[in-house]
Amino acid sequence: MKGKIIRGLIYSFLISGAAGPALAQGERELAQEYFKTGDCDKATTLYNTYLQSDFDRLSLRNYVECMQRLKKWSEAEQFLKKRTKTNQEHAGWYQLYWGALLEAQGKAQDGLKKYRQAIASLGEGIDQNREMAEEFRRLQHPELSLIALNDARTKAKRSDLFQLEVASIYKELNEPEKMIDELLSYGTRYQNVQIVQNMFQDFLKGEKEQLLLEKILYERIQAYPNEGFYNELLIWYQVQKKDFYKAFVQERALDKRFNHKGERLYNLGMLALQNEDYASSGQIFDYIIKEYQKENIYSVARRMAIFAREQQVRNTFPINQEEVSKLVKQYHKLLDDLGINPRTVAVLRNLASLHAFYQNDFEKAVAALDTAIQAGKQDPLFVDHCKLDLGDIYLLKGEPWEASLLYSQVEKSQKDNVLGYDAKLRNAKLHYYKGDFDLAKEVLNILKKATTREIANDANDLSLLIMDNTGLDSSEVAMRAFANIELLLFQNNTHEALDSLQAMLKQYPKHSLTDELLWMAAKTYVKLDSTDAALKNLFDLYNQFGHDILGDDALFEIARLHEEKLNNRELAMKYYQELLEKYPGSIFIAEARKRFRTLRGDLVN
Image (cartoon, rainbow, N blue to C red; front, side, top):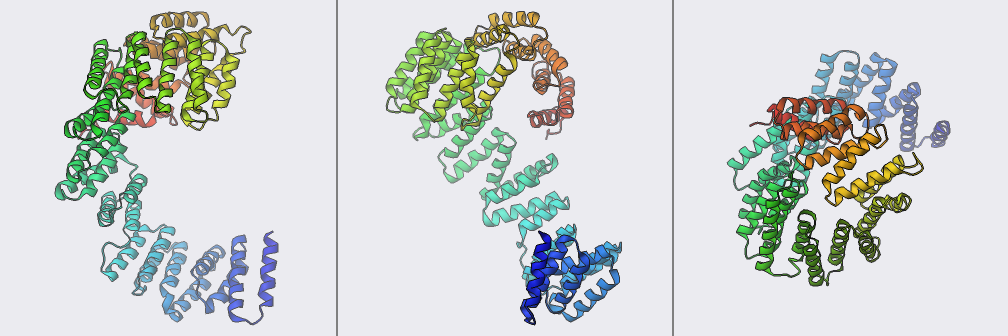
């Protein structure tokens, strides 16, 4: 193919005859093809002829590179020397590639001298400065690239030129403070937060650089209190670090200054909630409640403040029943104050969940959802959410057929919708709990193609669990027992589930489910605040199956329990360090590194 292209170019070259421009263009294109194929002898002959009468930077670069490969140092220098004298308009480029030629011969100082002459030869315009700066970066000389751009600034008498390019060069030169200064200067000048955020996202990989940015931003906010850009950037930085309380402090200042009426604070509160910082989320919503009692945001903020505390209670083990009772009272107070209306019907769903899963009061739970369905009947999506909740409650009560009926109703009414896929997944789990693995797999295979990653992943995980642990014996006794334990845990029959877990571990000591059983037992003991029992199962899992998929999960949980429950900093650091070294691809790497450094004191200001 390459031969045909070159023959075609030669033909074009020949038939172009004496037509000057066409001939020159033909020479350039043919030389380029020879260069691509590595035939430098033919390429340089054509480039030499072409460059005698025309200038083309790419051709000049290729010519010099070829002469370097051929080691025709003297001939190349004579050519560049002559062209530098006869073509003053482009003398800078000839000197630049002359410098590259000298550097390739090991004459670094002579090359540097030519590079500097190249910059000095540039005219009054600044476009060539940018092009030359790019070429110096290609030649791995960022320091010269910086000189070229600063020369443009001097000529134009503008220190704000090429700020993004200069910032990028300072990154290469490992001068983070100057890099940050350039980007902040650009950001305040053009108020383009998004571009600056993207640049910092790429540049600030090291923790020292990140802390430097935080320090500089605090200094700028104090020095320029009316410049909101610095606050905006600091909020973004703190959200990236998942330090939502610090982000709240800055967002609160912007909210007052620019009269956002709590809207951005609400978004931050929701973001904190999604990232499981329930304490900060609750504080943010409390502030909105205090400041905006007459705004539309007030009622939803009240609900979310209670919901944030509810999530904190749900994720603090063992579950504090007194706190659950407080949450129920707070939700009832909210309904008494605001009434049951489209803005508060979601509260009834929260109440039903607390009644069913934490108070075992199924009658109140069903009554709350019936009221919610009646009050929110104009919103079919909300009604179907309530039906899924009802299905879960019937499953809690041990009435799987009623649960399946409700799930199927939502499947039908929300077909090809996220909620419909959710309903289908719950039905698949119900089949699994009942031991109908073939039917469960049929549904799960459909869900693997679901549009939402979370549902597709859940379906894939359950499908793999079933496939990996069925067919090992004709009765599938072990898998049925395991599925039943999962149902017991869902129904909050925790102690009965643990008894079954221990019995299975004794009965099937080398079964393919052993690692799953140990992991399930450990998680259950954690919820019961039985740290010693949890650690025993975790160490068994790690020691026996550290090479398998749950190895890093077990090690991270071992480290976390030593940190949070046993207050043993040294051992926690040891296990976090072990995870970092042994499982570099783990999803826990970022969190483990953060916790390790915090324990070591790196982040202490």
